[in-house]
Image (cartoon, rainbow over all chains, first blue to last red; front, side, top):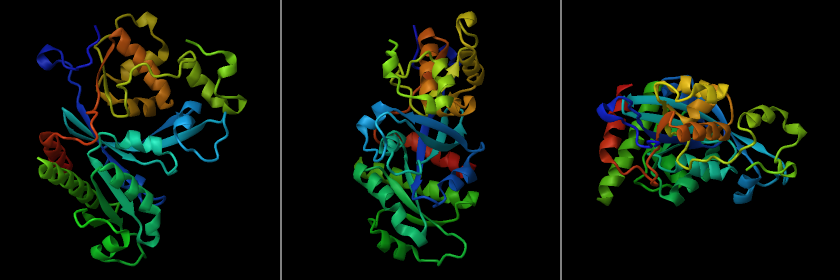
Length: 197
Length: 124
């Protein structure tokens, strides 16, 4: 018999519980940079093949009928303890691969949506995606060098997100700064959980 | 199980696909629905019948001496996720690996789990 539950008597073969956080946002907002700054391993890269079957369930504009395409995923890992491991997935650059976003988002603790104040609109589709699905998210305002520093409230107004959604200024290259954003997300998810109990 | 030649979803332009595709003998359907990106895979101490396994199966067994996610296995083997899912399905069926799939609810409902993750992230 195959044991899908993992431990043998005595816990000899421990298989950790996986959890994940999605790092979303528009193109060039620093998603991979953030994964890189907190991951314990160099970010890994894998690919999902989008086949005709996939095309059928998703609106993939411009794909010829028999063509296949590849959805690239970059991700990192933080071992929380021997029983829990956290994965950080950057969303695929092409917003049209929504089916992949669904797979990434399902069961996630939540999402960090990175925004670049010079191109706020590039992160609107990400915000819509997580808002509509009721998945907890926080906004990370990646402060790029040379870009104007805005106040959190200004960004919040410009993005038109609910007051309950944390908006955090950050530098995705900096480990401590990225950690702060992740902590803010996990706390936000816990707050939401408490609110529903 | 094998689809007819006319049903191949790739053509000559998709050359690099042939090798991974051949690895799984033309199968594209993952057999195990619980194999998600972060599903943890751990190899049993020794394969039940190593002679019956392909090189790729054995590579997975080697990699998964410590628990790894499906996505990590795909990244380390440098093959598409769908291929790894098929290979893993074989190994699960044979009882050569054990897995733990993530909670399949829209959001993580477990406060203790969230607290552990919070403490863990603060500690890195």
